[in-house]
Length: 308
Image 1 (cartoon, rainbow, N blue to C red):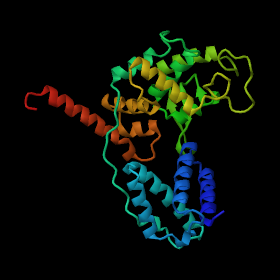
Image 2 (tube, rainbow, N blue to C red):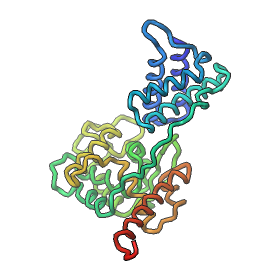
Image 3 (cartoon, rainbow, N blue to C red):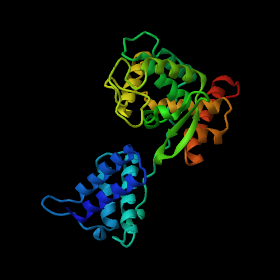
């Protein structure tokens, strides 16, 4: 195995020890594997990390542009490589992190598409309404109520255990990015949907399944085999209902998180409070919802004001 490949493996282990999410690990490992492949000519070893200079980094970026990748994708790949060489620098394997010298491509400013409150409510209310022959309608309704009512990331929702729910005080303990924990209030409709699901779910078994779960943390949402419902499974459920209720298969779990934050802000919620509810480390991440709301306000002004 080449020195660069060994460095990539060790960096992946470092990310895992630091609590990086499974999604981040998969993305970084895929990007760094492609970087390694680019530097590995047929029948030859890639250069050792100290031999990789700024010119090589720039040639790699040119190759990414020529492949037609978007600026956002290139930025992500560059971030992965910068992280790798930052790790190699800390370990004393390279003298400096030359990947930091390379200019970062500018990302186009694009506001997220956000469902209206009417669309979000129509979607959530339509789930579990009996229109579809689904195996676990109460579970599906609870999933949507928590996504929109609590603004959770899909990974956070999939990771909730029964022990994380305070049903008396209506709080959820959520593990976010970097395994950071936070408490999220459980609104009334979400609490009601959760109670209906828990009645169907029973104690320690999947809905309609008599097999006991394995010992250990007891996941809240279960699949048809009685195991934890995964991120991918939740995305599939959201896509199904969005397709048949709103005729929009592009809607995904994060769409409901965007709607949650935007609708809170539009109704007067404080930006700092929204930051805490979403689990954002930086306020600047939350401020994009201000831009969305201002865009909506300008659209209303242009449509309604006689001087527009």
